[in-house]
Amino acid sequence: MLKNLAITPPVLGRISIGRVVEKNGRRLPEKDDQFSITTQVQSGGSWLLHPYDEGLRKACNGKLRSIPVTVLFNDPELNLRSEYSLFDRQSGRPVCVGNGETCRRHTASGLQSLPCPSPRSCEFANSGCKPYGRLNVRIGDEDELGSFILRTTGFNSIRVLTARLRYFHAVSGGLLASLPLELRLRAKSTTQSHRAPIYYVDLTIREGLSLEEAIGEAREVDARRKVSGFDQAALDAVARDGFGEGAFEEPDEDMPAVVEEFFNEGEAVSQESATPGTSLKDKLDRKAVSNAGDVP
Image (cartoon, rainbow, N blue to C red; front, side, top):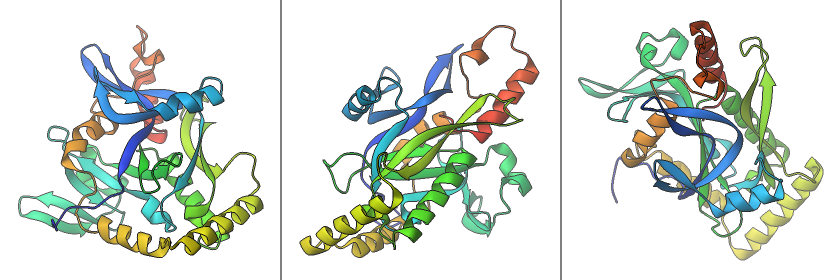
């Protein structure tokens, strides 16, 4: 078996809340106020929509702001991996990845383990270190071990998703992978956003169910799986070992697209930011907001 290669959940498609657009000859991330579910195939510089996108969008009469999902693993940290990340914008390769205590960094002497004080306290982070999270979820029932990946550099999304996964794991008695869940796009306003809405991703019990009903359903699903021979504990163990196989999770072929969407040197744009006459203060304010919300 190949060594130093992270074994990650098979990905069937992507979930995003934005896209990359061309403005004045540059490709920049553009925010949105709804989810998009895409395949892993691009055409004309844009990701092709997955059939799930059309079906779910019809059910919600337009804007897709909730997606029924389940997660693959009972361990919350296997479903959502997050760390501080710095990428080389030219090659798209990771330069430094840390968790706030330690980091793995490419140096002239090779890959080293070093202290990680978090971006606000790290001089090395001035060149573009951000929180970076990847959440794998299942949509539909066509592939029990396949997933759709949601990538985010938003503090709000990472914080909320981490809390939800841990809480649902606790209250369900560890049956996180059996719970009927739902991704939701929420909005909040802050002083920094000048009271304009910024969007983040939340994870809730599926609409129409109470928490108690969802836990009851999870117990039934777990019982059926055990009768069939489905070994969730073994699946979690294999996944944990797989993530630990490589120094960095993302494959090289995916990194240019990740850097373009989330670690772009230009600020995230919206319809308003393209308006002539926008002041420098407005642009800087929007850039600060983009670091709080999800782009895309």
